[in-house]
Image (cartoon, rainbow, N blue to C red; front, side, top):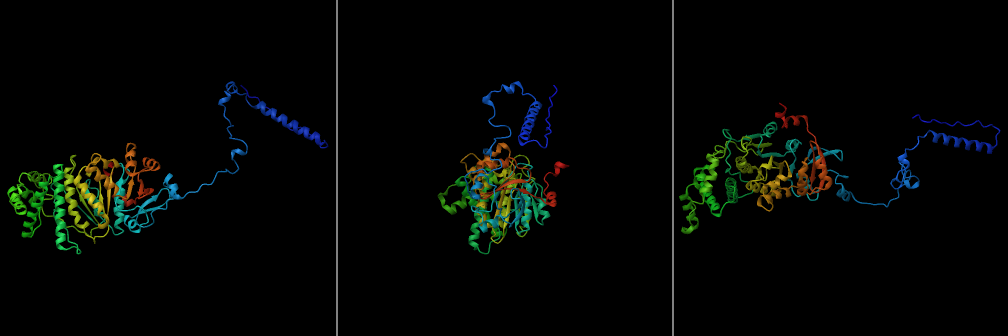
Length: 505
């Protein structure tokens, strides 16, 4: 249907017309223009004319007319003041000042648009952050989000600050190239390889410790190692008589090795545990004739340690060490990629237990300087109480030893796989998290957000931020402060840290 077109033009008014005639002419022109406008407007639809008055909008589409619209004027609301600390409770990334310029450069603070640096040692010693009680950290993130690159970047850049890096367990062999590129070295352990580590090696005695006290300390460490190995193989706690058998076997082997001028070996411990007559004679000398017999009680221990001598781990930990520990090396990693590929982590855990005991020689040195100890793929260790106990001891003593522990896992719920609620394993795993003042969370799957929020105490804003993080971007919770940080890699680092090289070929 053709649209009606109408227009109005001003009439000619003589120059000598009176004011009344001019006003009348202007009024007539305004009326004619209004009628022309109405004539050009299409008629409203019938449904609009009969629209329910109760459902019509109160104000026109242009908004509320008049002074009450607050357009072009001032909105009179009562003043409200609060500190940035209060505002951060509602939105934790408001007006964040950062951690300072000291430490390792990580990348860019997304909200502050500034450089983000991190050094747990300087943060602890300065006391600038309330609640920062230890230098330990946990790093969690799903595969492909860049958490491994962040761990390697922290290690690489820390060396420039004079720190040393130890990786007691490298299940995938990813740290070997990094260690060699930085002037360090890697020890590869596995069937058929030439590397040998004797976990019963005694570390060098610190100058401030007397010989008697150091001998007691070395004996305690060896007993803890033997008990941890046996517990891992037997998959249960040791009985009191089994602990006694370990004590007696260790003392017998150490005395014989000292007489020969050598070091004790695991194979000698296993052989002594399989000799009930020797254990019974030693028990009789220690407790008298009514002490009883240990032969049957020590049989399970002998078979458990036999795996490291004649089983799938033979040749790795049952001979004198072929490598000397160099405490001055910038980076040392233990490559265990030849173990644990069959789905059974027992061999990997036994190897890591022995390697950790061997590496503690440097960690116990109070003059060793500041060091990072990185547990990569730590989710594989959560189900083994013996390793959790060793890690807990290292976490608790981190300040006295001058070390910062970094635990790398995929999901926060990996900590819950240590056991049922209230079990020894679950308590140890949650204790490790509680002893980490720094929590770095990369993107988590939607079904993992509830567990992450519960374990870390995330706010609603932080939980939402974690679900939307992109590659290389993570939520850093340093004590009570939160940051969204974009990790920045140098091209040389990107090439060195590439873990997807096989996917590209």
